[in-house]
Length: 94
Length: 63
Image (cartoon, rainbow over all chains, first blue to last red; front, side):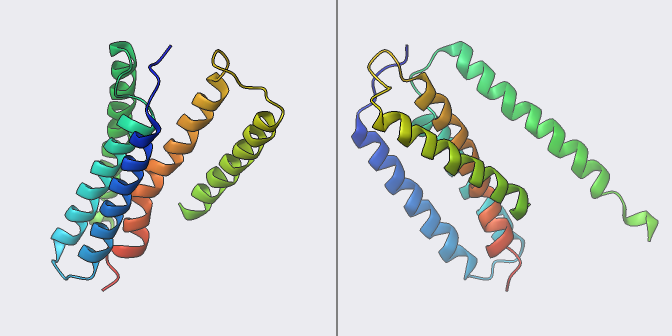
């Protein structure tokens, strides 16, 4: 059984996510070129980690669950890199 | 991608409605809350997808 989590943690997590959303939104109005994409993805990754740790109870769970979660992320990265390695190298067909 | 996400959200709302019905019938207790835990995992998975989709679809490359 997992530990009982204080409801305050959920409110704080939600507020942190709303602040990160505001940050994404404001950065989108500044023209930074390629850095716009990098900043948006960096904030999205931060939000995903916050959600996984607090909403999905990864923080405070067993090491086996940590391993399972990391394995899921690694598999997703393999799928994305295989897809992109095809998609991004198709310029020669034109 | 938005369409696929919409399907996930619709399924999630359905799951939340079932959870609300079960909670209304006093199904859950200190020892019986795995259903809520798993439904929460699914809902937050959809949540994480939206964290990436929202800026990519609506913010990046629209200036």
